[in-house]
Image 1 (tube, rainbow, N blue to C red):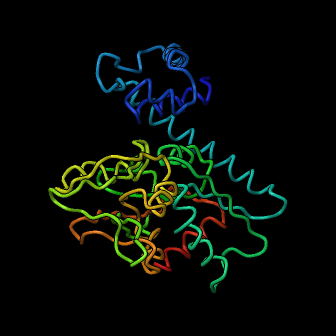
Image 2 (image 1 turned 45 degrees about the vertical axis):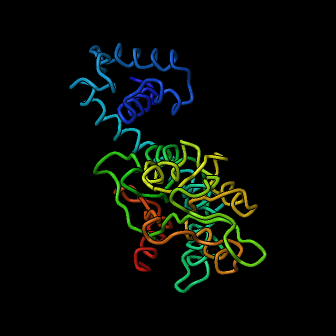
Length: 303
């Protein structure tokens, strides 16, 4: 019988199309990951991977095994989750995966509503466990049954990679990236978006972040003079840099609306400079714990 981790390796390789990227997701070295895929092929008795193609693809036998592997990993993960939830000192637990900035903004507001509004879904005998990180990694937690729900961004340039047909979603909110900068003592923007004018220092996102992929090439299409100044791997960090007056940043409106109303930050440009996106809540199609189902249903009714 193949080790469960080898099935998880095959899933990661199918999702990424790259031995290097899949090894990173599985937190092993590239050579070690390659040996594990070879071990799975030896167990199966046939080649599972076409290594001559870029990106790497599975053979027909690999695709067939992938279907079973995905089902096995998903079922084992959810069984483990239900067992752990049932033994949590008598408290019902709902596990949520999301991004760090979403945890601080939309997700915290959402949990507050479930806790305080009638009917109260999150009572005194319930517990919420939140995991944060990159969306790719959080999606893996959902795939492996380690969380019940995934809250993440959705945009044509950024799609959560989940096994097709195995998950449902609802749109929790729509948001937009807006260009902002610090205001001076008179409440005027310290920087401006001008065609052919003085270049404004740009505070940007590191490439692995969802915000970097959402902004993507859109920033290159704007006709304004922007000089890259600071690149940060945290939206909260980008927010802090903008508050310090270090440049122009495209930040989620949900994050900066209060700052703009107080006059601490100013929005530059108009609708043409905004980049819209969604925030979605994902769940497996299979039955979840009673508490997770109640959270989903209450959220759906609230939409």
